[in-house]
Image (cartoon, rainbow, N blue to C red):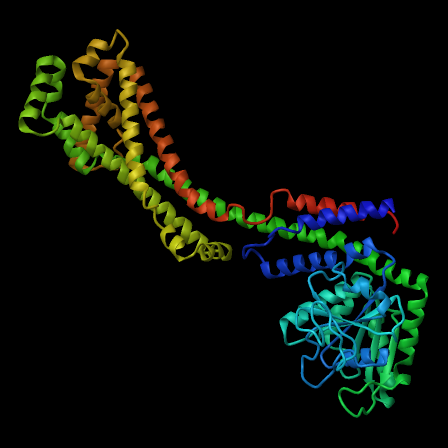
Amino acid sequence: MAGNDRLRAALESLRRHLDQDLFPLEIGDAAADRRVLKELRGQLDDYLLPRLAAIDAPLLAVVGGSTGAGKSTLVNSLVGTTVTEPGVLRPTTLAPTLVCNPADSPWFTSPVILPGLARVTGGVIGGATGGASGAGRGEPGTLRIAPVEALPPGLALLDAPDIDSVVTANRELAAQLLAAADLWLFVTTAARYADEVPWSFLRLARERSTALAVILQRVPDEAREPVAADLARLLADNGLAGTPLFAVPELALPSERARLPAPAVQPIATWLADLSVDAKARAEVVRRTLTGALDSLATRVPDLADRVERQRAGIAELRAIADKAYDVAMSAFDEGMRDGRLLRGEVLARWQDFVGTGDLMRSLESRIGWLRDRIAAAFRGGPAPDRELRVALESGVESLIRSTADGAAERAVEAWLALPAGRDVLDRSGVAVSGRLGRASADLPRRAGEAVRAWQGHVLDLVRSEGADRRTIARAASFGVNSLGVLIMLAVFSTTGGITGIELGIAGGTGVLSQKLLEAVFGDQAVRTLTQEAREDLRRRVRALLDEERARFSSLVEGLGPATETAARLREAAKAVQERGDL
């Protein structure tokens, strides 16, 4: 009992880890991954956990097989009454019917096994008695419980939908019910026993050591021996030698709803009756199927863990794509600082106004010259040249930030669209979000402007701090904090690799001039330090802006997929199940 408790705890832990959306995105063969997950959840819920909780509960034999194999007719014939309705229309079995002795009804009407199916109670077709959740034949998505005195206690028969039904939901339900069975009664016919679909299920029974009996129906008298022998050979070839095999002759029945004569199914009925009254034999069937299902977890759960890691890797790839796009954008901004791009156009014109006229040199020679320039600017009604240059530089940096952010967004969207998982994420986000995602966010210009102005304020603070030194205070005061600050800002973009011709001569010359002026005020080492601090501060602010832009992508995959430790926890749970003691 202690061993069973530990095993149940391990399975419950495993089940909790499966209770996540492990495969939300189209990564790898996501449809197959989800199917594997659904099957594993189903077998834990429908069979392993309930069976371990009640090892002595009645045996559940699921009658499964292909379309038209005669499953419903067989069930009606075995219990001697019409409890499930056969017919010529396919699919016939829309809602599975479970036939049991009335003494076993409480077990099967409880939600312990097959908890996902609502219960409907009813007995003989045409005379069904109602239950709390419905009555009669049952509707799709329900499990109809038919208590019948003729079936001995300890054993229930469940008429499942066709394993090859044209209705997908029926095929899935058939597989679910077979996974919940202690025993398979697999029904086939003389004409279809070699079909591949049934054999895919029979091989699955072999892999999981499921207790199994095969019933060969509609066998012509003259073909009975050769067909049965060939089927026995196929069973042996597929690792199922020794499987009980019953052959039911082909009989002319008065209607599709007629039952087979009792002698035709007597060998099967006797075998089942013996099983129901022999507690040891029932326990052996349960132990075999339960052990096989548990052993299968040793491969199925690690395989699921591998699939989980693939899903996580796919989601990580999407994040990495966005990260790379914005890392490239940061590199583009760095290049924009180095290639002289910002010294073109308006910045270059304002720079010429500020320095090229010679007013700057005169301002250094005399406070009078500086005051004269200020007074003249006020008289003209225009801003001082340093103010115009600062505004032009601000505009240029903002434009560079916006262009790099636009490029990053476009690259990230294009890369996501090239991957099924990326397309899936963008489709989930909706047209309003995904349509905007390929460009920088609408409020980036405002945030970029605030960041650049904050950077300029920081540069002025650096100049004030450096100019407060008593050795430089006089020289700094003769020029002014604002002008020195603008020169430091320009020094950040002093490399002119992208400028040619006349622009190169002007910008290069003024760059050298501004450097000399700054060195004259602060000294060469201080200028290098100021410029480096100013450059790094701007980069930090731009990096923060780009990180905010990147978050528009990362937020779309945030929380998607399995938790980081899920794959490891699954493997641990599988190992704990493997280390169980004897049942």
